[in-house]
Length: 278
Image (cartoon, rainbow, N blue to C red; front, side):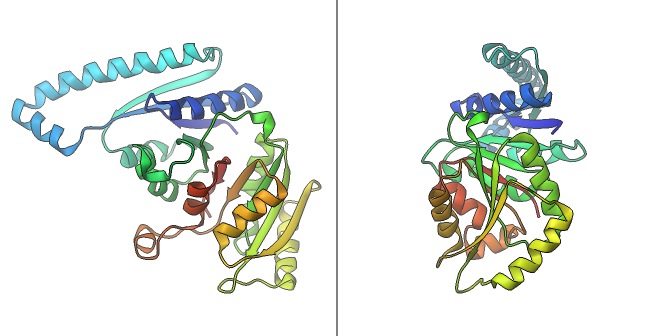
């Protein structure tokens, strides 16, 4: 773990994500980038067109200067000035600027804070969080409350091991590098998505060739709904974090078929949720 991205909108949600990023950075000597995006709604852009490009540029310069100063204040307030922290201020669409920034930067993790008991669409970043999670090529950790790094001791990894073993092994390595936690790899069988123990064991053997783990359990559970099954098992095992991986639906498929597993789990759990691309 070398580079962490934290989108900052100067709300309590940002405090949650930056605080956790600071804990990881202290332990693993990571570099943190604080990204603030200046977003103008369509009506504001129309107003700028009326007064001219020069006025918009002057306004942008002032807003960027203020934002950079506030980012520096956030670091001072958290007493994290000794860490390696970079500041990035951009103007544009939230989704577009985050995905654009991440390309080519080799970001290892993005941390996103959203309010407890609220769904992804209930605030500015949240309204686009589901699309951000599906669009970027790095893991995203979603937090709903202040969390101590040391409190994450048991992790549930919801995965059917059907993907490429090397990809999952790489993500599990990241997680084990960050957290000193026991992993529980779980598969939730439903009437529509069933994997026999024989097939799961075969997949497990292939995975173990890539990443043998001593402190790890592998279990199959049954439920009528995958997301509800994951949440039920997470409660039963008393885990401190849920990890979701695998193929993600396209925006069109999600529009037609509804939420996918990661979105449902995030919406209905207050635990930290780590989502990685598959």
